[in-house]
Length: 109
Length: 170
Image 1: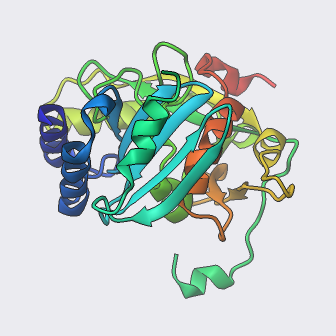
Image 2: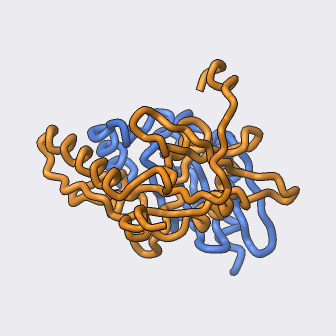
Image 3: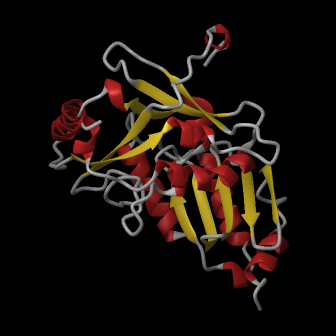
């Protein structure tokens, strides 16, 4: 959460033609997402793009669960494992089914 | 793009052409997560997945230069211009060209869904100062989850960052 906050502040200070500041909606949605994560799902990489989108990556390589929060604060996701693939676009972070993420993280246990 | 623009016929870049994405670095943070070179994963040499953004592929266009219409000197001049812009703000950025990603348009066009329909297209979008300016866009009917799915393939198609001097070699 501290990383999110400092990235947001830095982007706002340095916004120019190349870097877009994060919208309030995106920041709030990212906060909601992080706060809603089950304890078993706290191992992820967060990355804010230069265009102001917040990304979360769980897993890596061929088995990756990607989350994208856009400037309007809506959440999209896509996950792929050796067994299945699934995803959806533009759901509210409150409506995202965190169990899917939990199942992905727990898939090898 | 407004309605007027959508009436203009799109001009596709020939599949046999190479397109290039310029990569920059600096000694001060120039991207949000403070990585250098900007937008490139220093461990793998590939562009970071998060920099293949919905905003770019759907709204603004993911900018490239056509190799045959661009030069190393122009890329260096662009870096110098950006460095000067930072200097004007009082920042000693040492902004410089770090390298380029080079891909054949055919390899980008080859990314397709299960039905064989193309995901991305490479458009010629020249402007006054950049005759080789071009951009990648995602197919109009696709949504964000599709970008997340197919940007992994695009990351591979764009390849690893290479020496920018390659811009001048054919």
